[in-house]
Length: 333
Length: 209
Image (tube, rainbow over all chains, first blue to last red):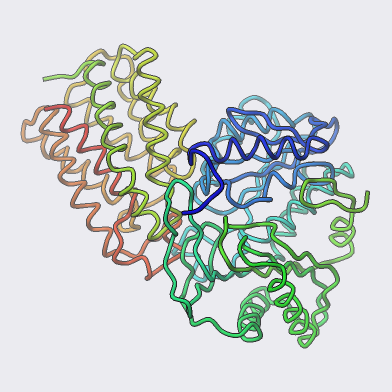
């Protein structure tokens, strides 16, 4: 393992100190329990959109804290969901009369800890709702598993609900909007290499040069199948097919296409793949109206990528375009 | 034979030592089918439990277990924090403020702990989770108590059964937790949560002898 770290046990806390130093214009960090909150929190009269999960997925979620997106992010240990008291601290730091919406990715630990925190907050009279995002089409037979995972769609969900909260929508309205986004967003991911969790010290799995994992989550867990590495045209076609046929997306649909690096895949390959995906969607008559390309929900240094499609309408497009001022997304100011 | 708060605290310290000793093994089991954090998280939690006991141990068995529960919930995260936290919380509630832990109280605590895990995680037998170690452990504990066993004998029977139950997860297709995403690919791997449950019960049994 070669990493720019000190003690593996202190990686998250030391990283948060740097995040706070780099982006003090939009966020601040509370320590022990660790919570990233927007610099001007709590914002009176506005729903606090809060998310969190294990660290190692940067810029998710701390990079999305700020005006027009998240009120707070709760970072757990690397690849480990945060504890209920940390989520609770995020709620109390940002939530006023308008209430809070917790965005939870469908992983067992995240669901259990956020559920407990929501109960704690409700017992104190705070109005807190939760939505669980489960956009990963790689998990087929969800009756016999913990259900589909929350992956790339999380970024789009946080942006759109954050924009709705910023314009003053009620908790009911923001929650309904979140459910709409969850119903029409789908993702698939592939891994060319495994990440190395700092405290583990060795890669999460081994792959030969000619192999990839198809249908991965964001924690270095193996995918649903191991397949030979193909040229980009064939690989991206396989990914597009998996996503498009799931919802399904149909000719004439307007969509947002999010091409995401898992951390180790450089932009030259990511743009190459994005171009192929755009062409394949156009061939199917699917209209790409908005795009996001880059490393936004990563898995440490894992090489690989994910594709996310969100079906757009006028309202979702307007909320996507709304001003956002965070460490990782910044436009319309 | 009964067990007082000091005995329970000593058993918890022994469990913390066992978790530290098996930290890498649990990480490796979890790396194979999950994300590789189980050993690290449990070790962080139990190290915090020892620190909390050093700062002032409660004077009843139930109080000790409640301290274990609240510390694990606030330090572990992941799925293991809420699951083990709930188990110890439910067990401590059953023990109440009694000063002694006898065999009937131990059985109630074990049953409550298992029910807590199942209520939180919604796993059943055969899902390849810690429940596959805990269900046979509780059954074996009940049988040992029925045969007139003392606290140590009951815990030893539970630990033996938990070992066998954990081993049984090797052949199962996981249906809960992160390993469930692998489906058939996870067959052949020991569930890390079942392994850690068996390790904890063994540590308690050894400490009670």
